[in-house]
Length: 565
Ligand code: ATP
Ligand code: MG
Image (cartoon, rainbow, N blue to C red; front, side, top):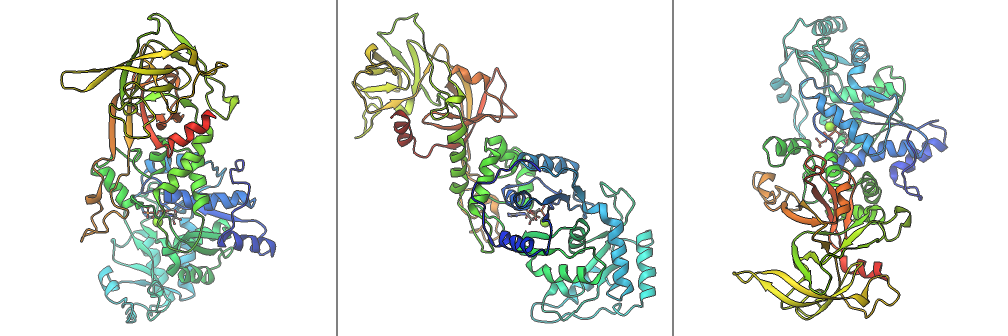
């Protein structure tokens, strides 16, 4: 297993407490968990919670975790998803060594278990059709009715089940049902279907099978075959636990895993169901699964979220049984926390306004050499050239400044980060009266870092040298939905109506310091005073850089002043 990424203080939650007790009492010698995605879509931030719980506890308690594809459904799965899921789990920092498994690896054993149930009269071949089965299942308040085929003999059941396997019947002609209790208050226990006929190829077992086991039958038995000790799943499986336990108790399972449920992650202003994510992709509401606005792991990665920020997020939200709706800001704060410590600094001007420093020699260039990170000297320094013409951000200039506007305005002074204090002497307008250029003067006695920096000025702004800076495209992202629970206010629950029309803003003529031409994909920079940005892994090219904004800075002014002192 990979090296530890957990925080120094080990998390405690009800699941870890159970695990601790089971190991201390000797009930289990070693923790075994599994992460069991169905390969019918790519992973999202909710899956990160499950990955972190299953792989994370295995790592914490010196146990093992299986990477198991729950591929019982032959129609839905796609190889592209399998590859993507493995890439995402690896990116989260986890490794399954040789423990990459598939529910379909166990089809033969599962079949044997089904025959076992038949032989002890705990399963029967049902010949009613799906609709009849549904109609006789009863309701929450009424019991179901026994099937007319419920009392078939063991021999007849065995013969029919073997014929089902041999392909002698059409889809839907028969199913195998557990014989439990049609009057059970738990509908899952009313003779649930265990196997159905599906004459379709399976991506791994090809045409070896024409009967396929259902999830409830498959899951617990796959757990048992892998020696899973704690089968951790989300709360919607709570009502399935009696069936999980029943199946394991009735067959000769090699061990009895314990299913424990926890509440799933819900995150405001987003959707986290694969069905909805697929719809967003297929209907073209987003660019793809890895669109940086998607809360998929591939989308978050492309947006610049470090895996360590996702792990921090999972740790912070914790594990419990209570329903929750986590604020997006919790996730963003985790990214800020991680990136503040690790992201190299750079200057980038999103909306350039040209400034000519009239008293600076025309052919002169100076090079400043600030730290790449204010608190990590080991990250080294960078070269920032300075010359007579620079760009500053339009937002940092106001003709009629409001009170406490400590940036640039006519007649006022501001410090250029790492460089000099300049004073705005003249404002140049175009025909329509728009500000297009500033003429400023600089004071050579105020050079940053010099012994006497000269006087103190309140404001510090970022800039780039016009002759040296590099034009880039910047993509600013906002939430994909404009409502905390998309679809909640729509009578039909249509979440698409709540898509935020302004979830992306593209600015094509930003200017950044020249060192950023060397930025690698996945390398996130803090554009000082602006936010965190990384080159887009799909669209950025060395000669046409495209940066994604990962997150904004929360309180840029407070932070900058702090750095300065
Ligand atoms: P979806 O609801 O998005 O379709 P799913 O539960 O069908 O997801 P699976 O591929 O079966 O997706 O999920 C694999 C594992 O991840 C399961 O153990 C599941 O419980 C867990 N999981 C899925 N979504 C979440 C979530 N939002 N929070 C926590 N765990 C989740
Ligand atoms: Mg599922």
